[in-house]
Length: 269
Image (cartoon, rainbow, N blue to C red):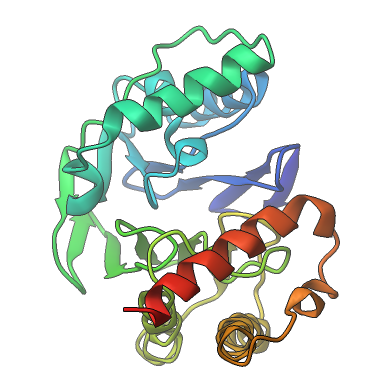
C-alpha cells in the first residue's frame, strides 16, 4: 500500500512490520530506498519506478545491511547503488543472503530477480559526506547502533530525512550493535534539524511525519527506552513495562530480550 505521497515522494508500506520503501523523484534522478519484502510488493515498486523515471537515472540507496532492507537489490540491476563503506565491506554477506533465502523458503516465495548482496557504486565513507546529482544533494550522517553500517540521508532541496531503522513511532530501539552508538546516533537529531530544513522524516518502519515536534518526541522516547532499560538491568528490575505503549508486544518481546542481553554484555566489559 502507499502510505504517503506528495509531489516528490511516494512511500510504500509493506504488510510486514510496517516497513517503508521510498521512491523520490527529482528533476535530476529517481532515488529508490530499501525496496523490500514480499515479491509482489517489490514488483509494484519496480513497476512504479519504471513508469515514472522517463530518462532520469535511477539510484538505489540502502540505509543499512539488515536482510529485509537489501532483499530488493536484484530487482533494479541498472541502478547506481549508494551505501556505507561498512555495508560494502561486510564479511558476513553470505549469511545475510542466507537469511533472505530462509525466509523465502519458509513461506514458499518465488522472486523473478536474483538474491545477491548489493554491490555499492557510490560509497559513503565519512560523516557529512555529500553526493550531488545535478541540483539534488544527498548529505549523509553515520547512523550506527542498530547496526554498524547505517546511514541517515538528507535529500535537498526537498528537506527529506531518510532515517533507516531509527525514530520509528511503532518500534522501540532494536539494538543489534551498540547501545552507546545508538544514543550517539539519536543525539545527531538536533544538529540535523539545525543545519537542514527538514520537512519530512521517513523511518524504516512505521509512519512518516512532517512535524519537527514529533521527530524530537521520537528521539526522546527512544533515548528514554535505552536509559530506563540500562537502569533496570543495573538494578535487576523487570523492564517489560517499557513496552506497554507499543501495539505489537507479543512480536516485540524477543527484540526486547535481545536488547537486554546486549546491554548486559556491554555492562560486563
